[in-house]
Image (cartoon, rainbow over all chains, first blue to last red; front, side, top):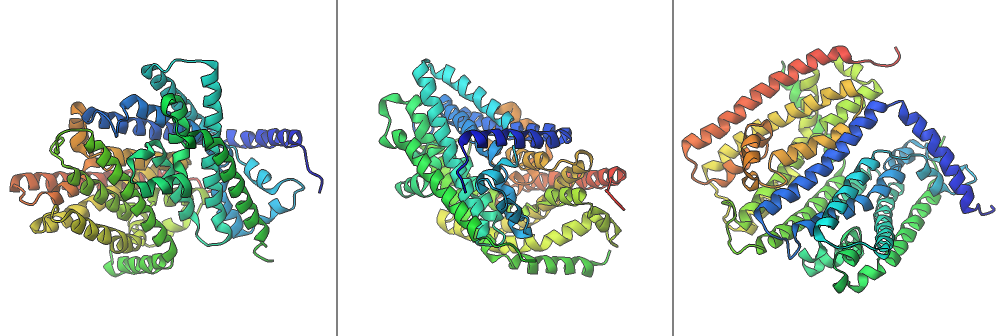
Length: 267
Length: 267
């Protein structure tokens, strides 16, 4: 099979996206309620921080606005996985029912085609809320602003998103090997809620686990240090784009390996 | 209503949930990791103040409170909203309504089996571990009996709230958003995310007047109080009973009114 160019995939994504949005538009109430639900969840997270800091001055040397910065950063970093990779949640059902076979017969990348099918518009509410929180805390911390900082921010946000995407891909691909794999995906999904805490609060064993095994520390903590505390950036922060790429590549390979192993439900 | 009918459903539920042993294992692993996270988080939080007691709660009080709240959540959460929503979308609800049993009780009893297994496999082990680890911070006496009574009320209130939320799905035909909102609101307002003792003033009073605090805060405060004043204990249980009856009536009436809303495609 000839390799398709990136432009080809981009064009095709736009077409699939347009169809998906059209079908979504017929459920307008669902979209509105889901967006409200998403914003509610984020506001609740915000309120818990607020209540905490009414009672305590800091968490392990991290002040209120610094924690908000981490929170906002993690919300933005978690948006792409919500918007572009939401079909992972359906993978289990597709594989179970046998519908998955349809994706195998297209002359385009299997992973791409599967993920392109769903664009989850709900993530936009989360993105805006995260952006608001980030800008607010950025302002309150008086971090200043320059083009370089913006560039850094974008690079590190993208790498943070890649880590979460990688985690979700790997978790979703569990369904190629086991039945009832919902709990694996749900487990990883719960883990992402812990990304908003600085990893330094954990003991060394769990710091290791959250850095290298379930790398949620790369979703907010390591990448945001580059902006938040530019004087004491650890090496792992600078490495986070590379780490993200490696994790993403591995998860993609795992997903594809599972998909290639898949041989339908028969009949 | 025939009580034997109900217990048959419970038994079926127990057998069904015992089929998925691996998923139980993943849930237990997830809980343990959650415990680790909140242990470290609150340790870091309490390390930031000089005193041991904040708002009348010590570190171990807070930990017991939050850990048991999570354990209670795991065993009370019946995913009723998902179930109702799915059945409405697929149209299977029509079959359930034909059953010789009220849908509200049918659903409750068919999920009660899962609750029973969850109680023995997640709540009880957690409780025992916490009792041993905190070494006597949980008083063991009559309060255990009051705790059990309180939990029975809590289960009932929680189910009524779930059922009301599920009924809303009949109108919106959207499940995801509502499902997303419900646990977040309940957990925050019931004190399972942050103990109610930490809430700043106007909120604390408002929350006391809402039904949610009867779900987690009431049983846990009954449990942690070794020598309760009879008046205080009776007020707590009385308020629970009040909400229990009120929410029960509201959920029944709301369901009855909403039944007219159901539209099932085809047939």
